[in-house]
Length: 142
Image (cartoon, rainbow, N blue to C red; front, side, top):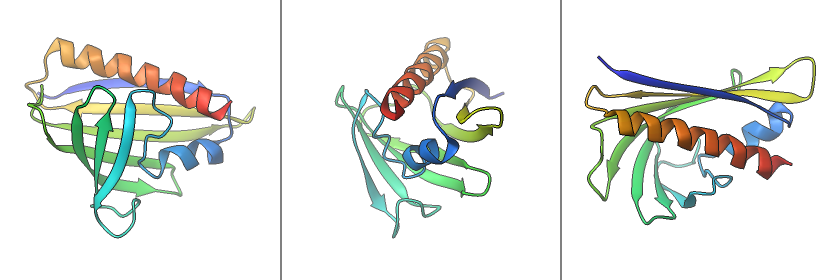
């Protein structure tokens, strides 16, 4: 069976501003990402486009955008490859935003479905990285 990690947060910024940072797949808000480059496709938001994410620790992952909806403010991407051996054979990420109607805040959910070979360490690492990304996102929008 697959292993799933679910994390969520409320970001003190309106949905439109949060979506503007999430949608391009650059992860420019993340303190652990050095750069993100589209490597295939005509535009970064094209479903099927590949993006190479270079992390500050030197690792590089290629991901493919699988779904994107401006109407429902969500995107999904899957891990395609890595320059280094991957700790898991597959992972699909889903990020969804919802407007908090009583304030100008945004509720964000980030789910990852890992292949059945994901270790407890991989799952915990994913959880902590999501929580760190939420903090980075909030700081970028402050």
